[in-house]
Image (tube, rainbow, N blue to C red; front, side, top):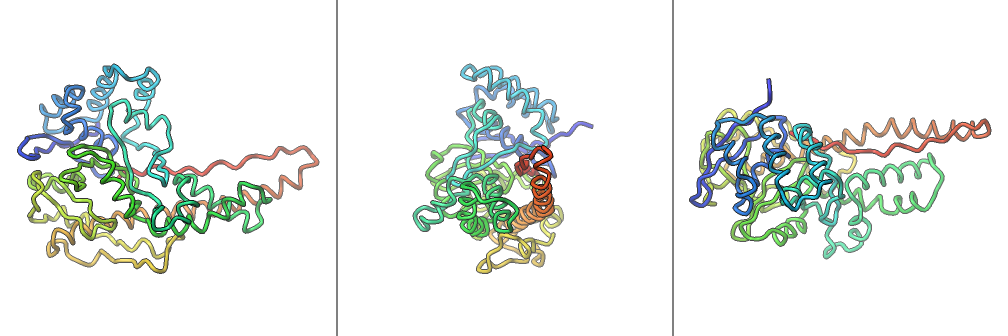
Length: 373
């Protein structure tokens, strides 16, 4: 059976619209892209076929979405042929996730995946930035790294420290940066920093949409009256017509709350669906290899969502998500440990067999999978 997505009717500042909702373990990159196309007034013309498709149905199939997006992409006059070719290759994979690599200066590592968003004239942004103003030294050591590059640097520093490799200019530089990288990752486990939040406010134009990449998720981001909001696409809110936005005011969700389509604080009764999605154990940072003792861990499994304020509930959801990401970082780090030991043993064997002409193999670069929930 083909995957399909429910449609929700919403009202934004008096204008009726329809959006696609996120299925559990579904393709949030695809949903975020479609919702920007559905809601952005500047894209109404090119997105016409998608709008017609969503307006005509209560749920839309994955294959229908991909076919419609491909047709829209082929009609974009300014799109280079190479971009269109990449689009056709990438669209069928959107339901499994895109490999996006943010750089800690606010940009992304360019690649085929980024061409997808350029083709539709949709901006993708992130707020995982090192702070040059408050910590210029850390910024100097961290800002040029991407997430994948930072992981690779930590591995190189580890190998050098434990004598697994011979020192060279590259791994010595990685060793110098490793402490700053660990501190930065520990203090930005939410993949959003205060300066990154300010960067997003300055970057987005008033009443404009973009795709926000954060915690390996893609969300529809909107700026209204100078404030940032993410579109609520969780299936648990399908019947709550008054819940449209979640504010993005804080790094840890402490100031975030739910809002109506007119950006008025929302009131709603939390159903069992809402509660069940927020009762898992959020204690995921206790064994995080990048953990910082000055950062406390919060057990978010205790409170009953039905007795929380909107702000508490929004923060509760964010803590759940942060814990999930921390567990993934921890798991990736721990999985790499056996590989490092094995690579070190292979390196020693290669040196011993040098006189016999045994070729020396280059270590495979560690890659991070984009996790789509």
